[in-house]
Length: 424
Ligand SMILES: *Cc1c(COP(=O)(O)O)cnc(C)c1O
Image (cartoon, rainbow, N blue to C red):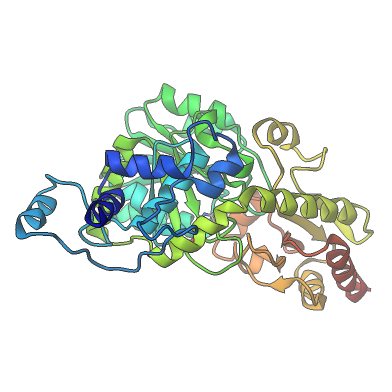
């Protein structure tokens, strides 16, 4: 009996590439088939329960796994039998996180990586080859720009950058037969521009390409790109999924045959997710929707308050009715997110004075934390862009970005008042 229990626990945990029947049973035990709500999935999907009967998610800190016999070892190395071999390949805690986020994004599978950038690198290296072409929004994460423009170019993959919201520029930039990926973030950082995911997916498919959406700013709690037609989703779990600014991680999500290619590359390349980080991210997912709603509520309060301040020239937040992406965001997102930006008159010096005067918000470039953050994009997150690229993206010297955390909005407003007081 005891031995049988152990055997079934062992089977339940043996994962390699895809789920065994025993493992699917273990997952089903954690989440009945009729529990289909986002929060139920966020709290329970993917969990393995070992023979110990633990209620919380187990953390498997093990670099390698023991074989019952030399024959079993040979079978696993030959890929004839499923089961863990080494944590660069598979780890039960990482797999649990992959399954939970895949369920939330409505993806067949997800492949976890050591960081958000490792996710984008893995996607490109696994799915592209020399001669391929990417059309990318010019409003993407700085390291994504550098990766695509500088590093992929050395391997013969070329890229053209286009304005996120101009469908006709996307179409004009496609090289028929050569363009394999359209890549974007929506909403964009820090201006909150919104791309029409459905329209761009259609454009990609008309040309035999795939649409990749970096869903970092919304997370599946506010936007599910695959359901809108996108082919692949990438995440930096470092941001809202962790939600507390502790761990780096990322994931690519999509169809099983795509993920098989990614896993094969990742095993060789080695940028796998740490099981500890996966364990942290799984609990981050449990509170994701509640937090995304709270971030959105705080950001909305701040945006509306900033609009009324004399020294503010403009506020950029997709939740504001006069934001150019407002209607589209209202259609394809279930909330407007936690990031907003605003311009103060007088350029860099006054923007820096404002930022230096706050005492509650953290001066840091990160976002997606329970703690609110404030940053000057032109000299930090977007410093690597040329002045003309920055002005094309609308990022002026007077622009300040705020990522709302979960502090009380009244306290955040009192803190921002210190900034305006310093401006005189
Ligand atoms: C932070 C970020 C990344 C990169 O993620 P890391 O975990 O820092 O590697 C990619 N895309 C977006 C939109 C990000 O904000």
